[in-house]
Image (cartoon, rainbow, N blue to C red; front, side):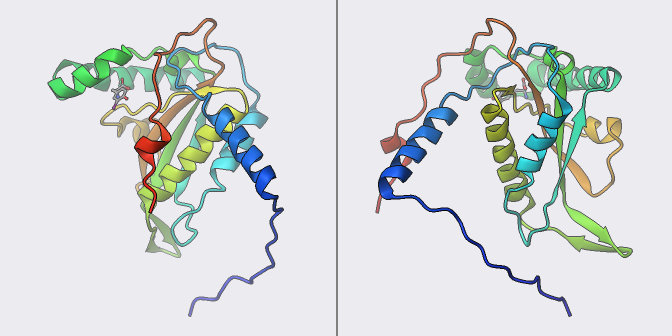
Length: 221
Ligand code: IYR
């Protein structure tokens, strides 16, 4: 029989309607300044900051509270170099035949290509792994809603990175099994996202994107 968690009182600070409107507008204003960058400065970022960012990601909800994630934090230049080499090999193949014409056409406005120098330049890489199951007392115990849970944790992570005044890129080299090999991850883990983190390169440019308006994304009933 599974034992239950002890339950403890939970109290959250609440706000007046006016204060909530102000706070929610202010948070939107902050998050609306977030942009993906593809060029980073090599300027160092303290380890303690990275630890706080990863702790924040780990506050995400997860199926049956299994917390099915591992965040590999890489600063070692030799490992970053290996990751870049392997990512570029895959990306070269993707950009030269594996991605459809439609996909390449959709990416063209963003001016991405197979070269990924940021994988060596950014001071930190966070390689996020999802854990399909856990090995407990010699038995395999499954995790639940792994994709959703790890996706939410990555959302928290990106918000925390932005809040700290840093930039990130959600990079998805495909396929990315090479990350399991380089980082010697166990069998129950699969790579999920590769996130370079750091300061943006000086005078970095970003595409002038527009976000969908409220009436395009919200349907009220
Ligand atoms: N993974 C490739 C291609 C790529 C795909 C999408 I969808 C993007 O929004 C951006 C890039 C790359 O990282 O270049």
